[in-house]
Amino acid sequence: MRAGIERRVSARSPDPLRPHRVLHVYRLGWVSYGDGLRLQAFLVGARRAGEIPDTLLLLQHFPVITLGRGATREEVLADERRLADLEIELFETNRGGRVTYHGPGQLVVYPILNLAPSRRDAHRYLRDLEEVVLRTLRDVGLDGRRLPGLTGVWVGDKKIAAIGVHLSHWITSHGVALNVNNETSPFHKLIIPCGLSHDRYSVTSIKEELQHEVSWSLIEERFISHFGEVFDCGPIIRSPETQSVQVIVMSVPDRRILLLKRNPAHGDFWQPVTGFLEPGESPAEAASRELEEETGLVGRPQSLNHEQSFLLDPWQVGRGNLQRPAIHREYSFLLTVPSPPPRLRIDPGQHATAGWFTIEEATRRVRWDSTRRALRRVAHLAVQ
Image (cartoon, rainbow, N blue to C red; front, side, top):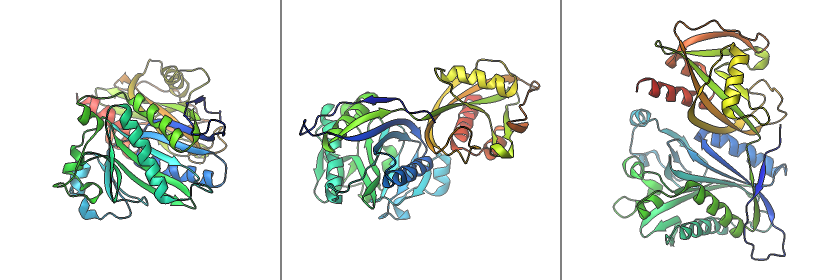
């Protein structure tokens, strides 16, 4: 596993003579909620064992409704069929709080911190997270505030940031959801957010308050900097330890998808063309190389503008060169070929067989969430 690229972010300290605690920061982009839970569980275990320093994850989730420990199913206003039609997942979690929604344009932050020995105070931890949000809002000209007895951050009587955490032996997980450029209608139409009645409270975003979108990178950078200030730590930006590509090969006009089945020694599952980036290689270059190496096809796959991060477990992918789980980012591409599909050159050392399937069949066969989402994107493109 190659080391992640590191970059320091400045954070002011109340005492410049005292050394900062190290904080590793990952700006992960898109992460499915299930993958986010698995990643947090792994990092919590590694932090408890002292294998990693304090870690901060910044990301966006695909549409999902989550129920905290204090939630009831009645606080979700949409039934399962309605959620399925909207492609919104539903999860019960061990975090504090009640019901909330995550979706595109909302910044989700998961601190994996060891609060022992000097910060073992759950109330203080929640107030510190609120303080980070308040300082971030001030940087874009918004006056946020706390409301007595309620966790989170508000602009007037409108909630702009929800906070729900979990503590295990003083190791933290879950965290903050700050509404940045997201639409707030799902909070009003699909749930009773945080158990607060719609006739008294509502939900807002930075975009709604300013009447224009704000720079995503700016919000992330200011949040990281203020987190360093409030928690007295030195943020170091890290890249995912590994990166790969997947190439969806589709024959036209019959819209059949190429899948390769890995040998039992390499996982024994169906997948599209995949492979790791080599040093100095761009995702587009890796996509073309892997396509030719794994199938004999030559072409220039087009980016699907779909990047997804998750925990890569070597046991799940036939080990390869990885020795332990790693934070991973995958880039998705599409190559169309004429129908009937051309003959392929399959490496028997890696794959047992290959097949062409409908998009629906391929979606059922593949193992990974990132591949299913890439296939859904291809299906949407195919009907446009």
